[in-house]
Length: 260
Picture 1 (cartoon, rainbow, N blue to C red):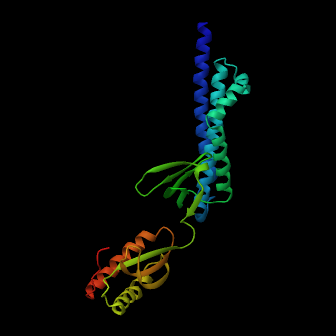
Picture 2 (picture 1 turned 90 degrees about the horizontal axis):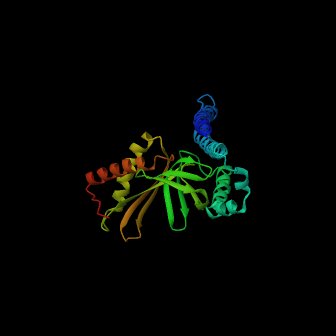
Picture 3 (picture 1 turned 180 degrees about the vertical axis):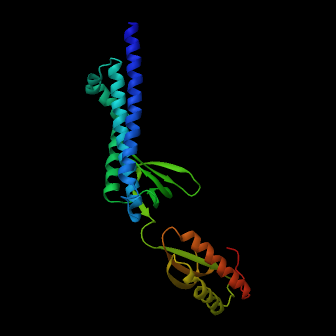
């Protein structure tokens, strides 16, 4: 009895060690296969990271299942009978097997349709729930998104109903300068145009610009609006840079911006 117990303990220890080695080798192989600098063109880095994370996630599920199966076998439990039993099937469904399958199916179509890749900025919507941030991982069951304040969201793939990808193609930056109703609009436009002539050519991220002109926004504020079309990922920097430039130029010209 004692020798049998020792044998089982040694078998379990050896099994865990083998599992650890195989898992490390699998992770290394996936990264070597997909993320080698010699294999990955710059424009496809996000796609390669997505496939690598997805394959790594799938391998982990398989390896952990085999580990659990092997542990139960070493302990002498009738694994095959348990798996075939209707009771176990009912428990599996009750624990969310249907939801798990929905995650797999939806994750498959997200990958197939290339709705987003690792590193892209997206907005994910499910009714009133809206999450916006950078995709850090696309798994076989969940997608991970890190938002602007650093929070990491784990989202079951079945809960992703609407995807708004903000990392493909040029993005529009809407810049509103709040003005008083008595502002000299001709002078405002002249000042803004002078800034544009001097500064826009210095910013490679700007792909286009449109002077929309005076507008009244939802809160009733009177504004002068400018649209920039910029390389994705550069929206915030372009907005901050040109808002500052416009503000300084308008103040120098004797035109005050009002509080919104």
